[in-house]
Image (tube, rainbow, N blue to C red; front, top):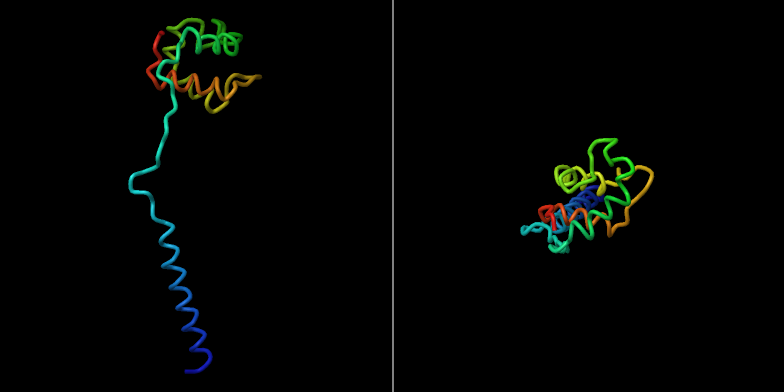
Length: 116
């Protein structure tokens, strides 16, 4: 076997080894990702969510710009929209919510947006 054939054979073996060893790392978890939902099901609209809305959203959404977020009915009717806007940090304009405030709104909406 000449030198070129030996080099080709060695490269082929090396390539096969890399191909087989990389397959091991590309296998997805069959059970899917593990998600831990730390939402407190007892988040209160009156004592936790409404104060966040009042302190950060009412300046613009207090009846003079849609959606109107002054009441439970207005907030509830727009709950998914509010959640989307705050979790993507598009709202509030000119301000920001803490991670805890964002999680409070997200969890409240995902737990059914109760008037509690």
